[in-house]
Each structure stands twice: as structure tokens, then as C-alpha cells.
Length: 452
Image (cartoon, one colour):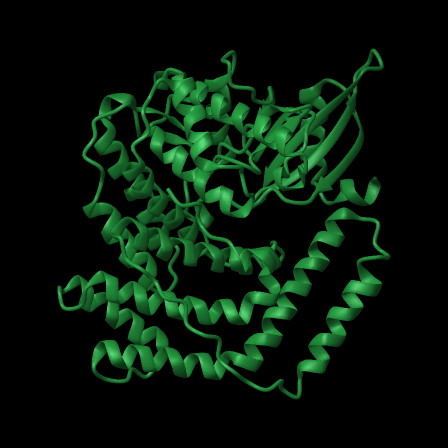
């Protein structure tokens, strides 16, 4: 415990103890949590009661990261849902200066994919959709944010949401991303013509971001990307997260939502917001790299969502995308070194580690090595194919794939190249990256949206 506690500053631990009104008897970091650290904390009160608590902590200054999604902001969403039918963890305290939230620890499991009984899967998924409808019933005026309010109207709120994400992307300071530029232009031009309803949108909602136990949902988690907007935005997020964690029949789940909400779902609006959801995920991956972050997870998931963004655009436009055949290449002289490192992680390091966090990161390192091995083998052939595709589309061969793709998107915006042709080239590029990442991605390489 002492070594684990040392990973958190003593002043933060003192705040946890003071806020909970006792002394810390156990603290341990848990895997996952995305950009935020997740810690389980047990606090013993003076009467001998042990309080099971949960600490979410962000060491990075939000201003340096360049996005507004602080834990302090997220706490406002938890408070808006307090005393409502939406099951959420009770907030024990929000640190006055650090980005830290202390809450009650709710029983339940998060990995929906671990459920094997189909009846239980359906019961929990149906319960979640009922809760999502309850979330959308909560008065949006309960949420007091400085930059948005229900009176702005739905279209302006959607424009505001796009503004927020474009600013995050521009302020990241990285190279221009042709796929992001293409999607940003499309979502701005195609905002649904609807004036309501305006609801509190959880954002990133669905399997993996709620807890379940005994056939029902025990808590909704992760309100980081919450905002005011269209309920179809959350429904689109459910379809996105269902690619990562298959979520039973999506049409049955939408029927559950319609029964619970009394609202008829507009599938065209879901398709629009699915593009917007995937765009936001891709933008999150364009920021700076945390060398101590979950890089091994970020690589396959980052590529998955780039593909899903292209597929979401193709779906809403009615464009068919044809998957190219894999390129052929012989193993390189270095392959045995990658294989040796992978075998040692698999058979020595992981089995001999009792720390779940270390096991998680070891498996992440294995994914990185798998990608490097296959990129080393197939990379040159795939680059040549990408340059061939760009030459056919542009009429001349670009110096690099990046330069050619940037020109391709620019010429689309100039009205010279249809968006369908751009998506075809982008899809073939992503197919090549998927070949290099397939071993690291596992089942994710073959996952797609449920048909709407």
C-alpha cells in the first residue's frame, strides 16, 4: 500500500482523508479510466466504519491539454442528475484546485462484453436504455454552464458543440489532419433541421460507461463529454460504443428507448450524430502524446475510430466502400526480435505479475510491438499503394501520402473532387493501416457499426 500511495501526492491524500472524515486504510490504482487516473480508496471513520470510495484524478493542467473537459466541469453533470431517477455515484467532494473528484464506490461491473447469458445481456441493455430516457427527461436548466443554456436552441447548441471540438483540434498545434478537416466541413454543412428537444447529453454513453449487477444498471459513469443538445446525439454514441462492446440488437434497444421516452427516433439524425461522435473521438487522438499513457490501447482504438468515421460518412451519404486485398511481403530480418519480445511478455512478464495495472500496460506494450513488427514488414508496400491511389485521383504523383491526402481534401472543398472519391481513397489508406495493426487490434479489426 505504501508504494501505491506514494504515487499520489500526500496533500491530495490528506484532502481525501479530510473530505471523507477519516483515515485512508487502502488505496490502489485501477486499470482504465481513459485520460483520467482511477483509484479505489477505503477510508475508516472514527466509529470504525469503512467507506468504499472512488477517486478520479487528472494530473494534467486542462489549459495545457487544450480542452474544456475538466473534472470540475464534469462534477456539475453529476450534481444535475442528483436526486433524479438516473443512478449515479454520490459526489463526496470536488478538490478546490486540483482536478480530482471523490465519490462513493458503486458495486457493479463495467465490461458488458464479459456477460455470457443472453437474457441477462438483454435485461441490462434494456435497463440502460430506460435510464438514458430518464436522463433526457431531467430539466436541462439544472445544468449551469457558462457557455451554453437551453434557451440557445438546438441548432445553435449543435453549432456550439462543433465550435468546441474544432477549437480543441486547432489548438492542439499538430499537423492538419485531412480526415478531420473533411468531417468538420461536412458536419457544419449538414446540421439536422430540428428545433428540439434540448436535453442533457451524456456524450460517450453506452456499454463500458455504466456499471451493472444482478441484471440491472447500478450506475451511469463518465460524464466527461456532457453538454446540452439533441437526444439523438446520445443514441449515436450508443451505436459507436456498441462497436467496441457489442450491445445486443440495436433496433430492439432503440425500441426500448422509444417506449421509455415517448419519442420517435429519427434514424437520419442518428446517422448525422454518429459522424459527429466519431469526429470527436478522432479529434481526441490528435492532441499531444502522453508517453506514460495507455499508448498500447490508443493505437488500435485510434485506428478503429478513424475507420468508423469514414464508414459513418459513407453510410450517411449512401456510398459503398470496397475493401482492398492485403499487400504481400516477406518477413523482415528483424521479425524474430519482435517475436522474442512478445513471447517473453506473454510467458514470463504477465504470468509473474500480480498487479492488474502492470498486466494491463504489459499487454499494451505487446500491442505496440505487434504493430511495429507488421509495419516494418508491410509498410513500404502499403505506402506505394497509397501513392498509386492518390496519383489516380489527383492526376499527378505526390511526394508523400500526407501531402497527397491534404491536396485531395483541399480539392474536394474547391469543388473539384466529389466527397465519395475522397472517402474511397481514405478507406483504402485505413485498410492498409489496419493490415499493419491487425494483430494488435484483434477482434476490433473486423468490427463495424450495426446497420441502422
